[in-house]
Image (spheres, rainbow, N blue to C red):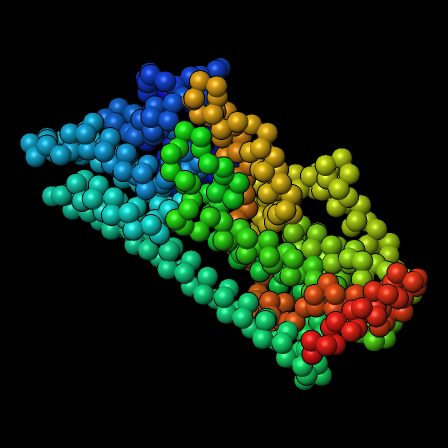
Length: 472
């Protein structure tokens, strides 16, 4: 059937051949097209459009877009049940007399659909109901055929590997967060026993930028595409259930990535406010300016923005005597690149340049594109808020979801890049677990370094000293 212009960047790395199954023009009741692009349809018709038959296999962009957006209207496990039912009933796979030729024709198409689902949205299969439906359908397809049994085994093993890796990542994150909390507690009680600074761990801006890129790419790689939809999804008015996402983690990897951005900003501010001597504080600022510039050159815009955010925090920006000793020309250029005016026009131009470089890349280093993540989320949020999920006639507004899938598919390309730099465990451990000050502690350190300049600051300083010191 007519679809929509494909997103070549998403699907270019797979071995899947777009011409393997020719898309046949066929009309289902309840699907509407404009200029050969699917723009709306009833949920049932869209589900029907997902399921292959003897002569038809859905376009890959449609599969990605529908599996991404369908969860706004139906639980993934309910969708899987419907897909299984359609495969079984429509292809008469439940009939013991079904011809082997018929199964041989349809089985590879259904297996291909299931493979795309398990590869692109593996986290859906953390739900036991999903795994049960998957096993039931693949069992029907493979009975008596060794070739398909092997294909199913490979698909299942790859899925289990992905889910095991995700569980290990979540456990590692929990340990890192616990270590960081413990170190902050020790810092408050015995400051001298643990207090170190970034320059004693790494004094080379390029190396630190590379290690930041390691953390960014690892955390990006675990964010499932569905998390962008689940983070903002509202209850579907035609759904009687309380929520499509009440029974599983909605966007935990996305939230962990946002938390990393905040941690890096506070770490930068902590490193600047901690030194007692003005000269040392100025040196730390200049070091982070150089790190930020290296991040920009790599294409790591998220760490770049986190560093700029940390240096623009009030406890840091108020240190006028310290900034007076800093050569700020390079910082001014970086701030200009990330200037929020005109909807981050300068940054978006730089991002397009990095994306183009990535497409034509000759080395893995040139492929790196790490977007300023909060802005990507904001763009998807406003797209979601600005367009209705359903049209007045109750049909799914598929035009909206094509656009959302286009944005998410670009992210899918970026997150697949493997970091080409060598890991430095010592630096990574420091970045992830070094104690960071709270906002109040940053203000206190800032006032200790450069005294309050007016009555309001003096009052705040007194209040902070009595509050924070009473806690120790």
